[in-house]
Image 1 (tube, rainbow, N blue to C red):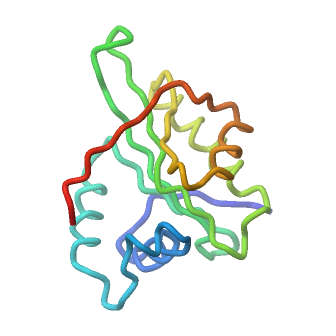
Image 2 (image 1 turned 90 degrees about the vertical axis):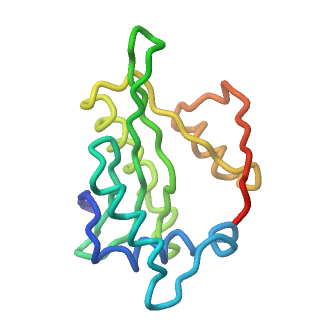
Length: 153
């Protein structure tokens, strides 16, 4: 199975939003109605213009089978270090259990190192215990307690 990775283009948006909406939590947050909401296009344009953001699609035989977003965060701690954050990792339902998730993380780790990051971090919803077990199997450590403040909407 030879996967290819590339930065997403505007024409990939429908496939990406479809992947984001294709799980129990995503179905409550995303809208896959056509035409797509203009808010997705605005968000894509901001992400695409930012050199510290990489919205990536994963293809198998020309079909988008997965997506994820890497963000590179420069900060002063760790002697002015940089960390990478991976979010919105989704694998198409028909392709789960085939090793694509592991391949995505190997790729993301290589990208983070290549950009000079000293660590790769992620958040996962507590309603997804199977995802947490997967991340732990890759070597991620439950090291911090995260908190969020939602502003509505």
